[in-house]
Length: 563
Image 1 (cartoon, rainbow, N blue to C red):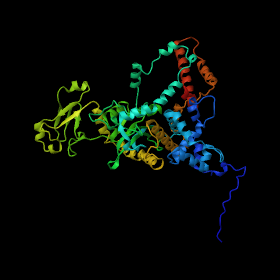
Image 2: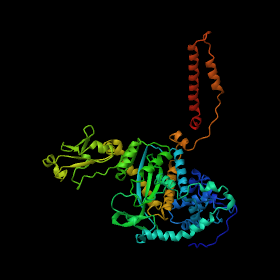
Image 3: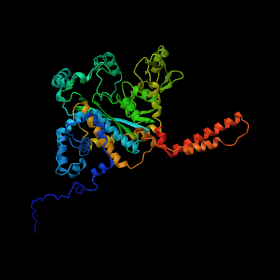
Image 4: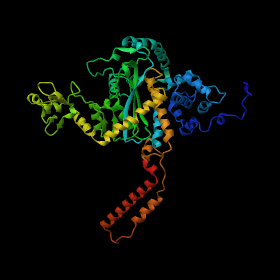
């Protein structure tokens, strides 16, 4: 007999709760148990007033941002619709079945109030958890970037002066209103003379000092318009998008031209593949330019000194290789081999440089000598040109594969080329080849994971600051997934985890140490005083103190780390 289901709903019993309805093996139960987010309240505390109406809990806000990542959702409106419909999501954010959820517009306002710095601190706190769990090895770093499409069309491009004037008129009223709100109110500023003596935004010395200390991270990936790589002008210098002024035109596969950004990752070489640094730049910025700032930031922030850094040929510029090698780190980077006018010509790597004689040896065994005062040009940081004799090249059987110049083949050697030669020597070693192979399976799958499952193909927000926020939350979510998978391990190096969060000093009883030292000092010696006996007593005392200190620090490492 066919059954017919009647749609009748009974009220929930009083003893029924989400704790019963959500399965014990649910993913969000594991996430809540493993990763504690109460630290965000301390991060955002200065942004809230001491009185007034209670806001949305910052922990709830960041949990909702993580749900946005894990569920691959595109907007806050869609996010709140999904949370209202899922019992496990309601349980994770801490709202009961009948409790009203936050409005989607409130999440947008909160994100704008927090700003990029709060989200960067959140990302770094997640990385700290990974370091404390022993997931960061710190011996090798991998650099790579990927293209992401912006939420703007190419048709929105317009002359840059028109877009900047439009934006200035659009926000001029809001700026005037905020200035009126921030006017000082009399007695709050009693010492007028000291206030007027402070440097202002128009102070030339202050402007020069701030400009000199800027890097890619401090300006959030913004392009330096004064930078020029040649006579060819960039399209973004004259045109900008009315929808997203920070997005720039990029060439995509198949010859398509779209507006987009570059997302840069710095990945640890350990098995967990933890993302240590993230930066989003406009699409016009080449991959090699932010590399050094990302490397210094990663090394100093996480207190690591890698043995080598690995990247593809886009990072293998003379500036990057020189800076990395001079810092004591091996540059396992790719090289662009330019052979001349065609691919049939010998590249520069086919010529051997003899530093003792200051000359190049070609594949045929002939020499290329420096032109002019090579030593003087080299001391002034100039490029030195090396050239073979035209008569020798004309009689050489390899000339069709070397040059078409009747004066002979020439090479140029500039500052930093000695590090290029060192890198060419690296390419013949097994360590270099292994690092290059490892890069393909270490960092590129992270980009594929983000694009396939976490909405990383196209940014949902606009302007550079907001897309950096979106990239930081995606990287935080990827690190959390690895923290859940590998987080049961202990830290590989106790000192590295303790350096990020200095522990409280442990009190150690020293009475036993003092008594041991006193007993050794008062050992019986000759009745008459002698300098030799006194010196022997001091040696016994110092050796006793040192041995006891070594024993104490081995039993109480936290005391040693806190000193």
